[in-house]
Image (cartoon, rainbow, N blue to C red):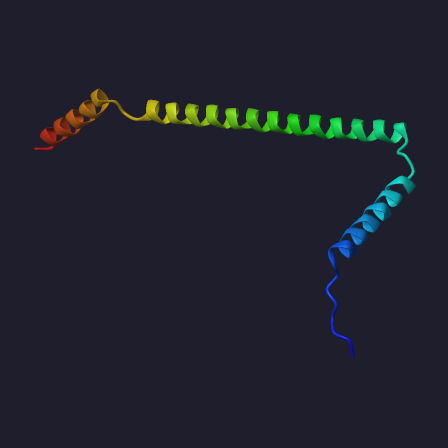
Length: 102
C-alpha cells in the first residue's frame, strides 16, 4: 500500500485555479436579476426602514409621555404633602384639645 503523497506547490496552484474557474462558471451561469424585482426589493426595504423609524419615534414619544406623567405624579405628591405651617397648626390643635380635656 502506497503512503500519503503530499501535493506539491504546482498541484495546489492548479487546484486553486480549477476551483476559481468553477466558481466563475457558476457565477456566469446565474440569470441576471430583473430590474422590476430589484425595484420591488428596494421599495420593501424602504418601507421596512420607514416602519422602523416610525416605531422608534413612537417609542421616544411614549417614553417622553411616561416621564411627563411621572413628573406630574411627583409634583402632585409633593403638593399633597402638608407644609410646615400645616403640621404646626395640626400640632397646636392637638395641644389645644389636650388642654381643653384637663
